[in-house]
Amino acid sequence: MTVLVSACLLGTACRYDGQSKVHPLAAALLKKHTAIPVCPEILGGLSTPRPPAERKGNGVFTESGADVTENYHRGAQEVLKLARLYGCAVAILKERSPACGAGEIYDGSFTHTLTGGFGVAAELLEKSGIRVLGESQLEEFLRE
Image 1 (cartoon, helix red, strand yellow):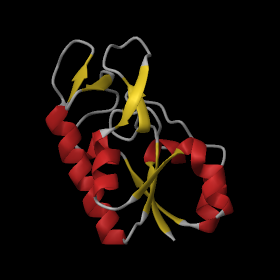
Image 2 (tube, one colour; image 1 turned 180 degrees about the vertical axis):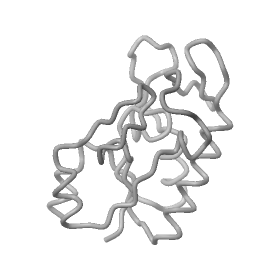
Image 3 (cartoon, rainbow, N blue to C red; image 1 turned 90 degrees about the vertical axis):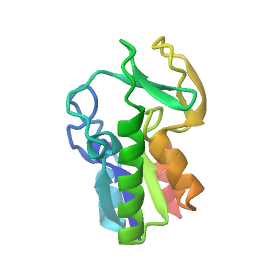
Image 4 (cartoon, helix red, strand yellow; image 1 turned 30 degrees about the vertical axis):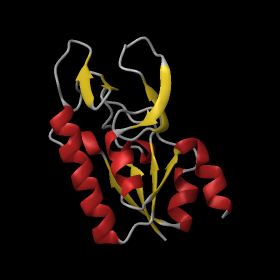
């Protein structure tokens, strides 16, 4: 199966802080499935590193108040294009991210407070019929 995967989970240093968050099961995923690495923030035109951002309502803002919502929407659209191009029915994305978070994201207060919700790209993928999983669900996904 071909799946979208947050590039940072595969070892790409594309997070806001210029780091990666390589998942310990990344190699197992690559043995079983074809992974299409994506980073909605970069695809939306943001740099690495970049100021941290959080989703607040329908917008995405940096801690200094800069509105980066348009970048996140542009990146989400590009990720959806890739999902359709490669026939991906599943996406495994970085949890709590304002782009990729699924089910739980930071609340926009920059106090590490979590709230229910989806990142911009995760939300678009879900609405488009693509199953979105967070990295904590990867082990279970590999057993399917």
